[in-house]
Image (cartoon, rainbow, N blue to C red; front, side):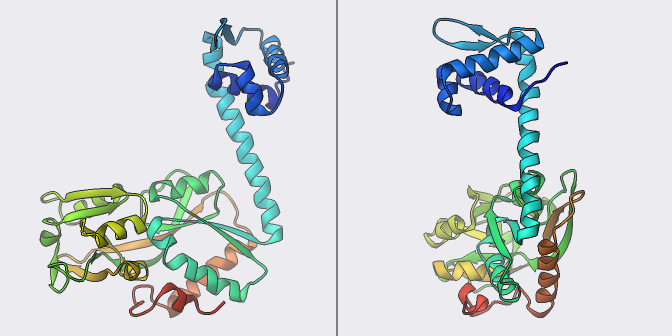
Amino acid sequence: MINITLRQFEAFLAVANLHSFTAAGKYLHITQSAVSGLIKELEAQIGVALFDRTSRAVFLSPDGETLLPVARKALNEFELAERYAGELKNRRSGLIRLVGAPLIACTLLPIYMAEFSRIAPDISIKMLDEPMSRVQRCILNGDASLGFGPERPLEPDIMARTLFNTPVSMICRPDHHLAKKKITWSMIKKEPLIIVGRESIAKISSDIGGRGSFRIAHVVDQMPTACALAASGQGIVVAGPFSILLARGYGLVVAPIFKPVLNRAMMLYMHRNRALGAPDSLFISFLEGYLKKNDPNLPAGRTVADMAGAM
């Protein structure tokens, strides 16, 4: 009976990545001889040589190349199991882990977290801010239980519900020549555009009929970067009107875009097959009630500190 251990796979992957038993030992905080012993044990159990050794380096043998993806998957599955175990512990201790796309993470989510903390002070909330392309992956990996961001195609095992809708608007300097005009998408297409997440422009293009192309000046992952670029005159940004909570700090203004008016759904993402803890469910109930009383698209004249209130 083969009895492969996690430590053997860790040693195998370390040597495969570093091409050195000595370097693998330093990485794993064990001796070079301990690494060599783990590899010999693994090779003896499997019955094949996993490495071709030279005087200068160590390389995977053909059988080692075959084992490599299996070992990586096994180690990833174990790390995921550790996260699940942590989730069970966190449910008992009262921890919520959120992940937010760039714009909502630096505007609305901190407000919601502050308001929730007033009614549930014993529950801790940790937030990750990630590019929208990684929000669902964070949930699948167990790094977060709840995700927030604009509507995107769902990955397997992810489900979503709409939190609110927001009209796509223009963010620019107050002295921009479009700042005080009734703006259309044909006007937007003539301006240098700063994009937060490349995938967003494809959806906009589809919604307005795909006629003509945009002048992409910059593609960035974080909304503060986009605002800083816009403030320095590098272009304009398109986002929901609640972005004023951030944009105002850069001296920017927000204006609606017409012909057509595009509404974006801001979504709550969850794992389809993983039960939510009681703190997660409580946060969702709170958020749904809060949004019925507080329109996220109407923060005129207010800041994040104003809306979050005194702590």
